[in-house]
Structures are given as C-alpha cells and as structure tokens.
View 1: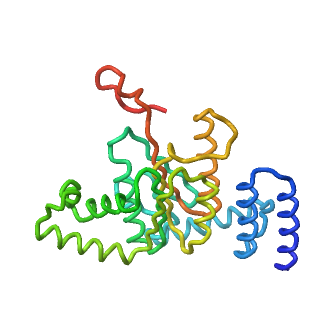
View 2: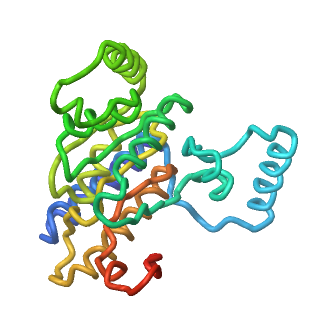
View 3: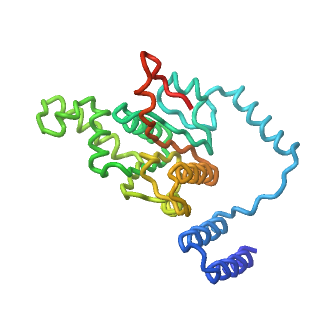
Length: 262
C-alpha cells in the first residue's frame, strides 16, 4: 500500500516539475508528500460529528479526572497560562510590541520554559540577531546577570557560578537555533520536518521574513506569511510563537491613551 502511494506521489511530483511553476513551492510540496507517506499521514476525509464528539468527550473526562492533564504547552508564566488556558496544538500566537519593549526576551523565556518542563524539542528562528547574540541574551535572563556586564566581561564570582549553572541546565535541553536571515515559511517547514519530538517553534520576528508571493504590498506579504505560519502550526500540531513589531501610531496619541489597538 505504501509503495503504491509512493508511486502515485512520484507521478504527481513529475507533473508538478514539468509545469514549471515556482521551484521552491514544488520542492516544498514534494517534501510534504514524502513526509506524509513516511509518517503514515493519509489524506483526511470527512468525519461524522459523532466520532469527533466522542474524542472531545473522552478528552473532557480525562481533564476532569486529572486536572494536570492538558493538551497544550505552558508558557511558564502562571497568570498568562490561566488566561490562555495554555498554548494548544496548532495555535499561532503573535507577541506584538514596539521595539525595545522585551518581545525577544519574553519569547525566549517561553522557549526555555517549554524546553525545560516538557522535555520536547524547541526550535527558534532568529532573523534579527545571530545565534551567539541570542544565546547571550538567554544566559543573561536565566542567570539574572546584567546584559551589559556580559558584553563587557565585568563579572563577579557569583555571576560565573550562575552562568555555569544555566549553561549546564540548558545544555541538557533540546533547543535548536537557526539564525538564517530573510527565511521563508517553505524553508522553515523543510528544516522542521527533520526534527523529531517537536514541541514549540519561536520566530523572531515576522517583519523580517520573506515570502514567495508576487506582490510588493508588504501588508499582503505579511498576511500571506501569517497564513502560512498558521497552516504550518496546524500541520505539525504544535504552537508557534511569533514576534511582531507594532507601528509607531501608538506613540503619536496624546496623553496616556497609548494602549495598542487592532
């Protein structure tokens, strides 16, 4: 059965290659089809509501019997987890703020918390800074050491102890960092397929991502990127946390009415 599916998929890939459409789209489609066969993901058909309701009811029973049983990932911030009821599989979570407000630090806190507590792999796509810069910020946050002290090397004895503890702790976590600039969602999917036991993806940030959409309108491009990220979260069955910079419109408002709006 799998061999027959493989033959059919190869025929489809052949036809797509001869169609001479966008090469990256064809490669992504080919990888996805082979991935589905190797992971035995059959094409989904209609499901009767009674079958879905049975699954939902069983999940509700399990949650009532064991309050600790949840299908989502905890951010590690208890008040936020209570509000979000954790990050569910297929969720796309946008962290929006003005530059310098702590988006990256907050997202990295979530990434390290998930990696430590869930035992699953966490993948970070850092488009704005290098892997070394990002890890320096993570160490600064986790070890409670001033980032300026880390950059200048003016560290006290207890700082070295804290840094050593953090490095030892995080080295045992499955955290993967990719600092490719201007990456596309297609390239992200290709890299994520090679990771097993994936629990969370963090992207910093959406404004620097590239798209294959044939338009110069950045708003449409970002719309296309966010749509692809949502599909990616659903396909992999994981939450994706993506940082986004808000425009300067909030700063021009008079008085204290600087709360961001949609």
